Image 1 (cartoon, helix red, strand yellow):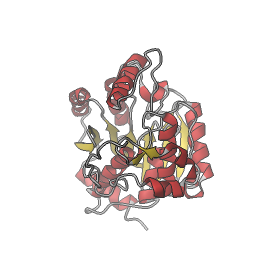
Image 2: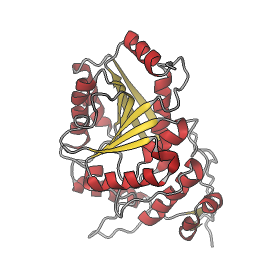
Image 3: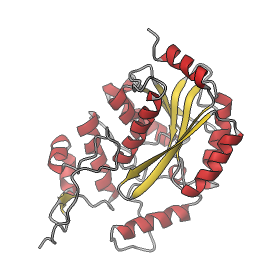
Image 4: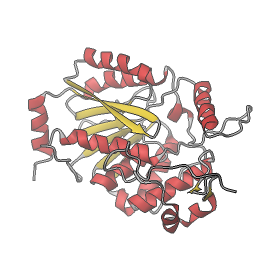
Length: 324
């Protein structure tokens, strides 16, 4: 017998107003778009249709259905055990970046192929470029240090005609670098984005996964922790964790100050923020913005910065977005 139904809001009001995923998942409609989702959908204890969010295969198939239903992506797949991120939160980052660019364009979001975006750590899933391209018509370059991730992302792009001319994937051949070796002398990016590896070790990543599974009410096998959203080493952790990574990103960004209008990165840990802001001030960034986001009970944020002053930003807009 199903338990008494909880009262759930029909709209996820914390998500960005333009986020297509503000409503609760309509599983019958998603199944119409992607029949492969059907075996994973069943009534939960409250009698509502849902999936088992602790099952990596179910989460992967939900993403496939969402991408096909909302973004017109006919082919999408990732290798086993690679990061399969929740799409609503990824979409929020893209929409807030669009708002940021609108500040340089008389409150109008610049759209179309003239807007060039760099995704640092695009991953095997290629989610950010897909959402940005399909939502705003932007062009993307996605970089990654992992050859298998690059191969997977390239295959997704090439398999979808609506993506193939708008997204380019580049291998970062020197893993110790972030922008160096990726940004070419002729490149101009209106904005960069990044979801950095925020753990300092595999043990830390597993501890976080264990905590998530406990919240989902799942019994745990102490000998094996399954990451429901997957993830390889370079996707989830790096030496020094998030703090070291984002501070290095700031330091490298100074070398490309005139090739990018805005740089940005997600910051998962509040404790990282003071160090990042101090590093940015020391780097002489002209403008620094911290944008808060909320997805359900999770609070997150991204930090954006530019080295261009107001006059230079206006010149950038006129040269790139207002040109014939």
